[in-house]
Image (tube, rainbow, N blue to C red; front, side, top):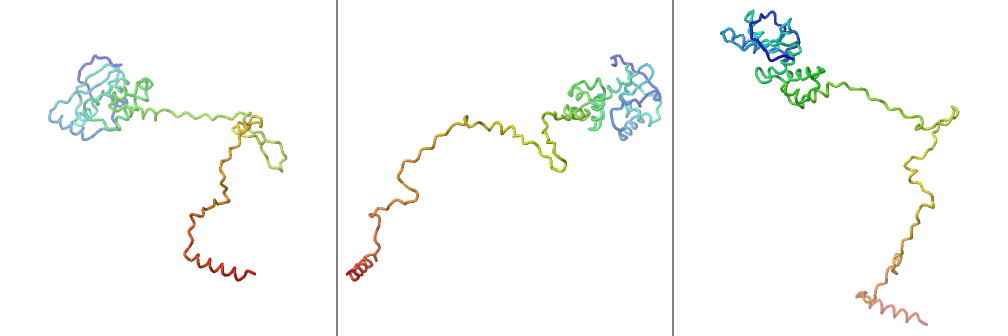
Amino acid sequence: MATSKTTTKTIAINHIRIDGNTQSRCTINQEVVAEYAALLSDHVILPSITLFFDGAEYWLADGFHRLHAHRANKKTHCIAEVHKGTQRDAVLYSLNANVPHGLNLSSEDKRKGVLTMLADPEWSELSDRAIARHCGCSHMTVGRLRNRSKPKLPQKVEQVPLQSRPKVEQVPPNKPLRLEQVPHPSRLTRLRPVEQVPKLNPLPRPRHNWQPNKMPPTPMATLTPSPCWKKHKSRLRACRRSCSP
């Protein structure tokens, strides 16, 4: 990892390497480059860029828009803070360079930073919250991208053992095959010998004299003769008298 010792010096732009995948953003914002170039033309001193020197190459870790602004103004040198470290140290530094300051990171930039750390065998061992703090995103985003990046292993197909397979009778080819009739295990638990089945006592009969086919007799006191009953009664008596011998 990079040490805390840094030096500020003027570096030739042609000696700065920007092709080591140390850019944490997806694209360069040309509007920001034009704005920085206008400030340089007005003799405004911009903050120094950040480089990592591994003994042979200078790797740019922070300040891509400022470097392009210097090139737009045809500058040959720029002021830089040089750290001792490798290209990998420059990549890790660039992922957190624009989180506290500078141009805000877009959702695609954050996603690229998280995927870069998850692709590294050492950085991927960090927790989701540690990666989220370094890349400036939420831990839920890191967890979702981590699950998507995991390779899906093929599911193992369980083979049915030969003992549990149903047996097939050896019949001539002109006859259809018929499987042995084996009762289901659930039915085996229901079947019990006759001796083990408890005998149920018959239900007691209801104690009443009412029969369903016969209606109970209606008391005579409740019957009221109709008004014309007396006329019919007198005619019936007269008919009986005439017919009697």
